[in-house]
Amino acid sequence: MNRRLRWMVAVSALSLLVAACGDDTAATTTAGTTAAPTTTITAATTTNAGGGGDVTEIDVSGFAFRPGDLTITPGTTVHWANQDAATHTTSSDDNLWNQSLAGGATFEFTFETPGTYTYHCNIHPSMTGTITVTS
Image (cartoon, rainbow, N blue to C red; front, side):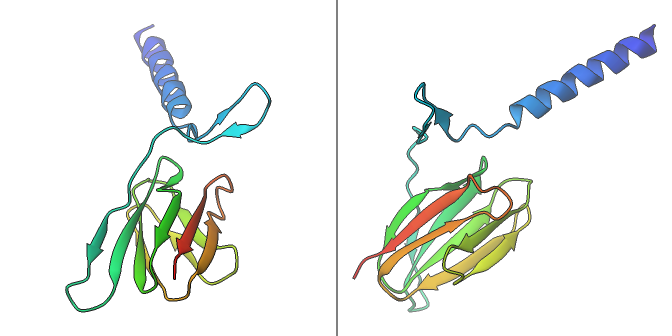
């Protein structure tokens, strides 16, 4: 009986763990549309001491790009850092970049030209972001 009880506890704990890992980055409203997450996260920007442009960090965590929308100036390097254990990608909708990010991996891309750049995760299509480069 003790062995059976331990098995039932393990299955229950695993079920709770799987349920806790769900994607809660967006909520569905009663109208059936998706509402944006309410958490606001500010990107960290640092000046490159080596004489280059600014570096802005995007955390990939909780199955989301944080921040999801980012405005930068030309010459800024965006640094994606995957904080999740799951593998994600940062993939430009215009095929400018496409990088797989295993858990803990990072990727950088420098934006030189003003414009709006949308991107997504190829593995998790609900993960999207927009980078606006101002002139």
